[in-house]
Length: 451
Ligand SMILES: Nc1ncnc2c1ncn2[C@@H]1O[C@H](COP(=O)(O)OP(=O)(O)OP(=O)(O)O)[C@@H](O)[C@H]1O
Image 1 (cartoon, helix red, strand yellow):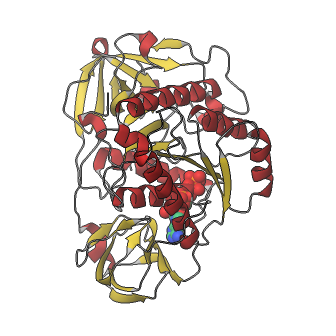
Image 2: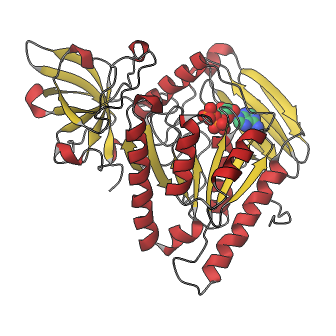
Image 3: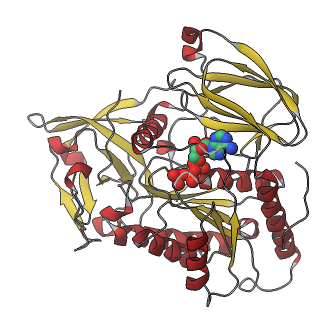
């Protein structure tokens, strides 16, 4: 990677499947091995076929996918639908095997401006490491990325994390994007420390993630709960930073939802304040948003706002496609990125588990209309086990008592596959055979119908 001038209690074994490899369906669509030569500072933008994986290997030169360098000569299998760019700083040759939905090469990328940001963060990190000033006054980088949906926020977050990890730091990734979560399933507010580059196929590490279950893919179902979980996560990370100088100096990168007006804007300001962000990156042509942020944050010390171009390579994802991606994300949790893991099917007596919900919300999104369910938003209510739980994705809480549910992280998730009222038993799938850490399960509106 070239250096440009600088600008001024954890997820347990329920955390999902580990790495795997699969050749799966490529042959069904016929092998089409081809070479692609990339000139310096160019990228090939790929959307993998919806039903067939794509294999890719590097023949010559250094390439990276969103900041994660690919090993030479190793065939990597990318699952159907994955969208990514293979970028090279100095030129490279790669080989592709399989069918792509779309494929285009481009030399017009904002990568230099993104790398400039990384270099300025590195200057900040090194300054903090060598500083003798006290904990409170040390300004380690806390970056929050905001912008419209499909502006490339998660992608830039990955780059900044990967480049920092490559330079020997261990930044924390904070994922507040409940609609298209990156760390684990949708509906979660989570953070994880990035010790190595983020795997281009399998995504973020889950073993040490701090995960809270919001349970919905839109914050409007319970704005107060969303804020409460953001605040809780921010406090938990402060504790981590107080204990670990390495994490503290490495700082954090926060990914947000693409909702930037009205209540969405308020949630952004709330997150900027609670995580004490030092740099707000606004992606895309967002003059109004930049002005609003400048206005809202003018009395907040030590926060800089930087507007960067969005990459023309970012894919637009309509609402149906987003739904499909959410389903894929849950499927990945239970069955692995390349679909070659079998989840455990288990049963439990009704009396073995207790299901709770937080606040008042409509059980299905279609019935929610525009109603805002804010009364008793943080009230914990016991849920009777019944057929309404079919296909619901429930979080396994670490809480020992119901009143600890909001403040507790979750160990993982199960999906309810059958409810036998007569025998008073539920059947569920889980990525782990381990016992639950407590008998408390948390329900939201998230469902998953295996296809
Ligand atoms: N340069 C690129 N080439 C190809 N694909 C890209 C590129 N940049 C981003 N993408 C893809 O475009 C899609 C949208 O990008 P990303 O998830 O970063 O946007 P976002 O702003 O975080 O979206 P949202 O807020 O809606 O979740 C992703 O599938 C990502 O992998």
